Length: 362
Image (cartoon, rainbow, N blue to C red; front, side):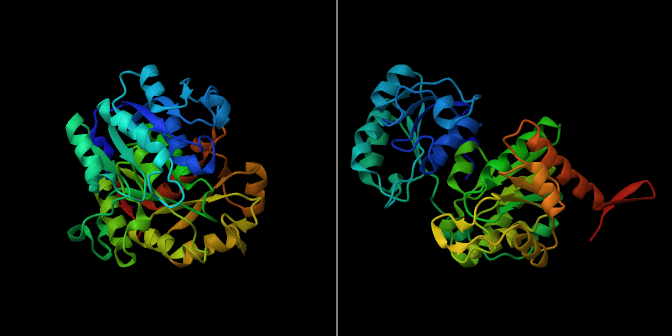
């Protein structure tokens, strides 16, 4: 899914983040407010943080100065030109909580399109499709997997992509893979590179990836093929493609999807996201984090790519000394550019100049 194709960007938007703004459960809302190239957040709905500022809630001085309010009705009063409502939280159970129903109805009645990351699909429920049709609104369910005729097994066709492919993987879930991917993409654009990016989760799609799918909704046999198709599509229009990874190869619960993304993207370089202070896995405290060395070794054993840098939550200098790899924190002012420098050094080292021309090492 490429939401850029459906909107004249940036779209004045209300972000529904009820009960989770600034928390891990609201990471989609947080990402849309901070980074989206599709949705221009005009107000946030969250009764828990209403009256505060996004800079305060998110701990980001550069967060937009927009109101946080207790309802969509109030948000529409603050942002009367809003054209979309983004549901930026996926609550436990995946369904639309009854307490949110009136907020979504108010948005649709105001003519707002609804972009949902829920596990249930509003576009398949007559209650919502009927209301949307009545008020000229559209419903986008970003978790919808590709249709059956768009599914295939991986066949290595990504090898024919002319663009350089850079994949962000990690040592665990929730270590900043999506943020690192986006910041690398933005740093590349700032450096004058013709860059695009591929999302494999709902937040990346809403932030504005050039292609995206919520990969955990794709049947396992077809995940690599779906990733191949997205990388191929973005690579046809850009010189470098940044790809968001998921989970980690050492994660006993989720490694299957990680491997499928690695094989589907078949990257030229990998950046590894890591929280050096984490020992137990997020939501799986009985599983231990195996660390950078083991993760990097598996990446390099299972692909032709090298791990070229670490996107760290810790002290970059200490991590460089510890692992012998370039390391940077993407939240530091120069962090994304430093990671990009490491990526470009690897990509350039793979190109050999002969007789005045360039050929890529096989």
